[in-house]
Image 1: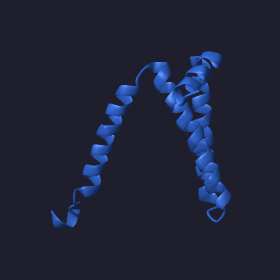
Image 2: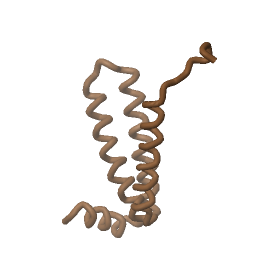
Image 3: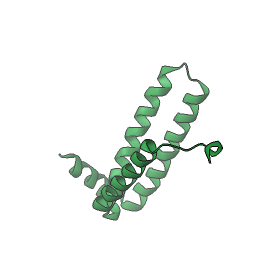
Image 4: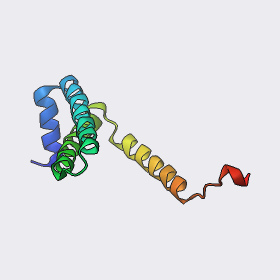
Amino acid sequence: MTEQEILEAAIAEYGGEIQKLVTIEELSELQKAIVKQIRYPGDYKRVIDIAEEMADVWVMLKQLTLIYGVGDEVERWKQKKLKRLLDQVTTPIIPKSAL
């Protein structure tokens, strides 16, 4: 099965509403993993935990794009956000003291 087919099969099996709830759960797990890594910065296992949770969130976000039918819209927004970020990181900041 392709990635797309797997995601569609999960939505068909569990239903869109349940997958929305699972997305929220996965986002919470990622949040907790990040907090634990900050609390225990020397524990490399925490970084691996973050990577695993990021993968879970990525899979769920891909499902949300299918559930809501917004793949193209997400891509447009992503490009806008990246352009804005580029502008932010490449525009010199004038210190208030120079004004």
